Length: 175
Image 1: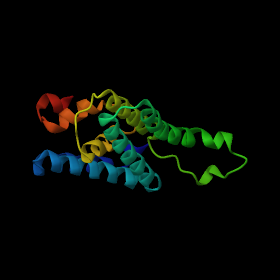
Image 2: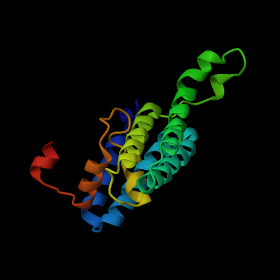
Image 3: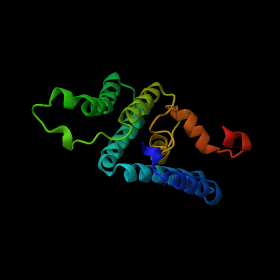
């Protein structure tokens, strides 16, 4: 399990202290959160990281395009890309086991979780329910390390609002 590493509590403490004590602007916090979360993923599974990053960038730009122009064909094509990645990693070995050695293919950590977050983002973008934001907002949302193994799948709008006005209170800490 990804969280069972003995270094995880130290990583979590480092991220929390740096985020709350040293970074004061939303952009700096988002950049740190995106980079730290991506770094955590790369540390735990270096092989799948670049593919997940490339897919995330594709979905971000597709979502941005869907917010300005909403043709159905673009939406369906955008959703097919992350869905096909999921289907490949989950089922290709079953269907193609006699033709290809799938022992060399590494299933990216949280591929289902990422796929459903990407699809949520594309759906909400196509409906016009997502505010304008930058790529750091999206990458911080996608790679947010405390949630990417088991969820829940946080709505982008909720995550975006929380990163714009973060609150550190006793109630939030206990929650």
